[in-house]
Image (cartoon, rainbow, N blue to C red; front, top):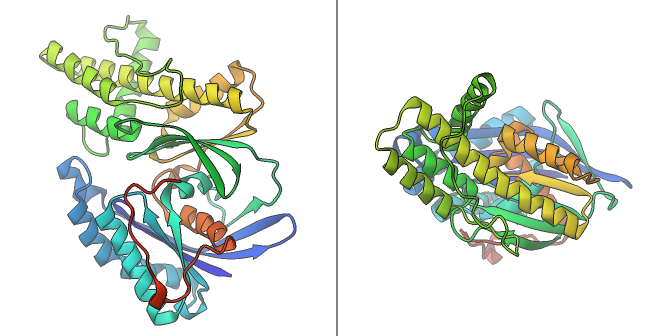
Length: 362
């Protein structure tokens, strides 16, 4: 079958088209077309995503991106068998644009629609590989059980996966998501949006200087909820600690900016990894999937691998390729297909009751 996927949960307009074939051992996916239109430059002046602007740009970009994907795939919409569309979580004005576009295609071409969860997409984002047009998802359960650490601008969750359609959320943030905290701290330091990569640049510079000059650490920040008796997270207190540190310094220099950035990243990642390792031990999982925008953080990747080896855990760590750490339609295509297999789709626009849900849970 040929499946079209639409993703508009935030500020990226993404559409992908895949061809899917089943065999005894695995489900194979062939990427026929894949396009993402980014709005980062438009939102940068606001220091974050401006929902009404995102909605406007999605509405404008969706037909253009679809045209590119169909041209790349060299097929017409009439050949598409199903449409997967993100219905949540995310910014509801943005989500509605993708849903409405999918409904219009359904009405015109009578193509079934598969409502798809954005966070489930991040779990499946590990399967497509860099530079390859084909990838497989094995049918056996050798990967299971899996623990997934989902870290993005809007979510920080630990999810236990016992089968590809059964998820148990064992921990989540009680306030700010870790990606949101990165962006807010970056703004405090006068860094441009998106803040995560900018924080990491300063952090890398500071680590090199410490390694070279062996400078003592002058700034310390808390590790919120690290030792709590659960798998929940909290990053608002860490963000506030940065605010007070900047206030007490009175003046930010290049050096203090680097130190704050490094200590913040150290603190946030230390908590993420500590609780993830603890969950791996308790639930005896075989694989760890780290997904979402923050999964692109090189320090997180390095320390996670290091701590798993240090604790002698027989767990394979899976990070998505860099281009799939952010929002994309390929991950929605894979997640959508498994929903389709579970008969979770709508055939006719006459019976459509799709709703955008900004707080949709797994």
